Amino acid sequence: MSDQIRDNTDRSRYELEIDGQIIFATYRRDGAILSILHVEAPIPLRGTGAASLLMKGIVETARATGAKVVPLCGYAAAWLRRHSGQGVISLN
Image 1 (cartoon, rainbow, N blue to C red):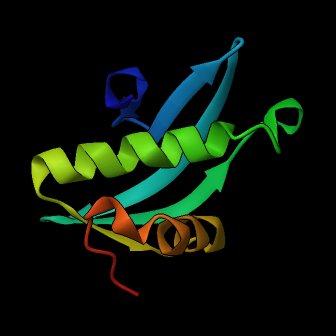
Image 2 (image 1 turned 120 degrees about the vertical axis):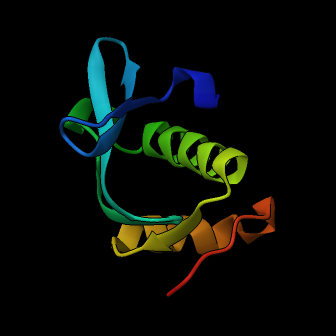
């Protein structure tokens, strides 16, 4: 999954394209800390699990690079709580 996630460093966001539409999560990096600021999906993709796919890819990327995810966005925080068994350290 993480191979489908694009790190758009110019816009400080991770992106996932589904059916020609972009789901994104803006972030801020500070060393090994990856703060997720906002997650957004286009209206037609809301409720389809698209944002969850994006978060899964972000978590896989964080795990691979040793980053710690700090969910500053309500959606990201809720997603990490629901998927806490994935082994990524989540800071609140």
